[in-house]
Length: 118
Image (tube, rainbow, N blue to C red; front, top):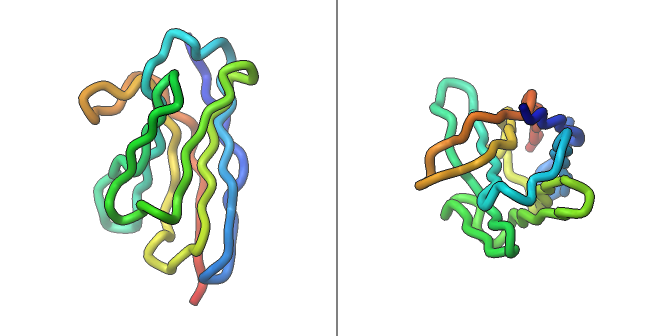
């Protein structure tokens, strides 16, 4: 069993930055792809970023250039740095693993609300 505990998030003005963290209860060395999803009000949950065990990253077009996903395998933690926030980034953000073929895996974080004011 793997538990993912998220921290970070909150209310921020447009143009601001946040860092979300996702700490795993055990080693994630065996999980190739970890990811971040988000769900905006009235919309489906979408995959926005993934990071491989080797540090390779992929992003949804909507966040490319503003979001940075990373992982620290020694700390069993995955991060999402969010810069130049826009009101349309308002959503609940979830970490997840293992991501396979862009589909979510079994393990979810509890979700973190990010609200961007204009």
